[in-house]
Image (cartoon, rainbow, N blue to C red):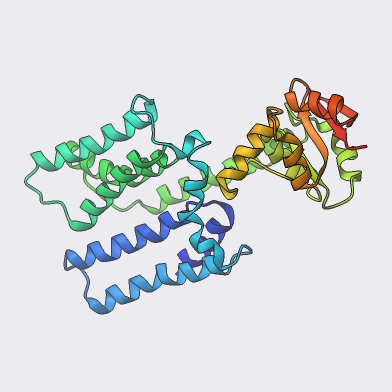
Length: 303
């Protein structure tokens, strides 16, 4: 049952929360097909992913988040490489497919018959490995326990539960890593790089709700440092309609319809790289004024 609140945290943090629920259903049905559990136990196990779906609906995004995994991919696939098919020559893809292939060969050469939950897990990992670049890592995670199991069988290693000493060692290592990582993360955050940090105070003085057209790469920092502002587009490209993204891209290149996009979005502030074509268009053709600069970025305001 602890998976239910964990799914709430996952869904509030990242869009791949559906993987956890799907794996839960896969394992429950696989165990039932292997006749390791009865109908009553199957029903109880399926209540966990069902309750997890309810937890997703209770996130700050609300019930609409339940449909997000089926829409964001189609929105972003045209523009973002990680949403496109993985490169078959990419090292991560090759390694993951080799992991899957190793398990298949081990099963074919073994007298042991794989169980249905194992077959389902391997098939799912193969689908994830070939679906999108961003899901290759998920495929590697799913196939890892199957690979470990086959390596144990091949090596003749006896499978035993970790003792108390081993458990305490791992807990100590994790606790030590957290103690070291927390202050380091805080120190690094105090000195951001490649972002116009010296413009933070100016940005925060702009009235809340003001529309800002900004270079995509800096919008994550902008959302963090000046949360009151409203970027007309940001790094969460998958939440926008493809036609809207095309207009944004055309505007950033100072294409023919850039004036219409600025007007429709209501942007009165721009945070752009100095060499952006839109900087020239806004300053020379629309009379926008440069009010600040830092780290290769210019802050412009409509007159």
